[in-house]
Length: 103
Image (cartoon, rainbow, N blue to C red):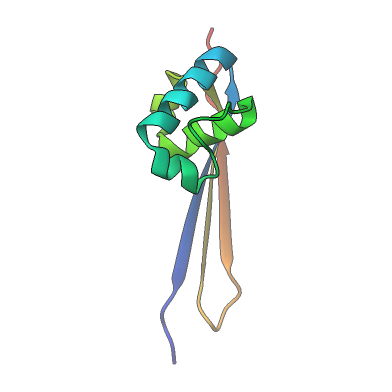
């Protein structure tokens, strides 16, 4: 009898670009500062990044708190948790929160 339970937690932050110029500038600098990581993500410091690619690069390299200072705004945070063993169906939980709008 295998009593091991496997659990998985996935956290998803949904952000929107509030300041495209700032996002592009930070992404260019991030690609220069960490070319190896940028290359692993398919980006080059020598080629201009489209805005979606720039936002993706920043999200891959920085925590949410830092991203808000780079021209991105958190719109929703979702945590998905599942747990199961070989004898049972997975149990899942999804919790989603949105920040309070400023007022």
